[in-house]
Image 1 (cartoon, one colour):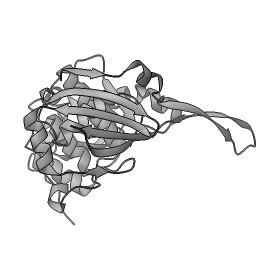
Image 2 (cartoon, helix red, strand yellow; image 1 turned 180 degrees about the vertical axis):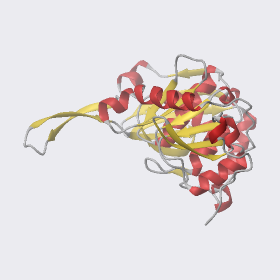
Image 3 (cartoon, one colour; image 1 turned 90 degrees about the vertical axis):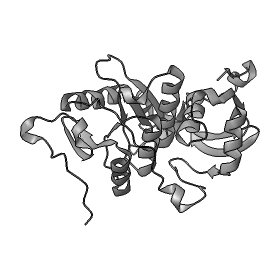
Image 4 (tube, helix red, strand yellow; image 1 turned 135 degrees about the vertical axis):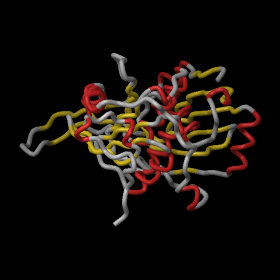
Amino acid sequence: MHGSRSGAHDRASMPTPSVRMPRLTSSGTHDERMLAEECPVALVYDGTTVAVVMATPADLTDLAVGFSLTEGIIGDIGEIEELTVVPGPDGIELRLWLRPNAGRRLKERRRHLVGPTGCGLCGIDSLREAGRIAQCVEQPAGLTPEQISTAIAALTESQILNHKTRAAHAAGFFRPGSKTMMVREDVGRHNALDKLAGALAIEGASGGAGAVILTSRLSVEMVQKTAAMGAGIVVAMSAPTALAVRTAEASGITLVGIARGDEFEIFSHPARVFMPAATQIEPEFRPQAN
């Protein structure tokens, strides 16, 4: 990616991630509350709008790169020739210019995604594409129960926007042994994960070096995006869907859900969680359908 730019006028008109709005409380008092902002963000490739998402106007370069990677529009960040963030009266455009091979692949896909906040599969071309299985992820490293607990606590502490508004999802990348966690927030859970994917790619970090930690429920799209990042472990505070578990199993991803404090549940590939011998889950563990 040669450049990412935004002109002085563009920066001046960029909306903020949160705003103060008047409210009337149940006790009858009038005051203000900080609310999370959301606005239409269009992803424009080689002059053509491919997707429009409702997103928090922050870390938009990360969003553009991450969306491009997790949706398979590009194979690596080097296929982006230029990226420009352009605010306007109706929303924000993320204008990406791709290298010729990537541009041709995008035209062949004829994929058009237009959806509201939290919608990850709107406008795809076929039912087969909705259930796509990413290339199997291989990650020899794992986590201890203590590290899972530490990662959840670190993500909770790092949610700056959510602490202000109580209305934002977060996605974090936990690296065992690191004292810091990379975190991205957004009103949309898919956007938060895409922002994290983009931030890792811009940093040149491998998804296999750690685990993806999420505040949201684990739907199939979140597992697919985790696989696209190359991460072999995903941990969420909420529960997964059944399709997410089946997809994680097929993709080689260790899926940990309902992680609260010291408690969690493992739904696929449990060998990457180094459980005490007395509670070790059998290696042949597989999800069963009722």
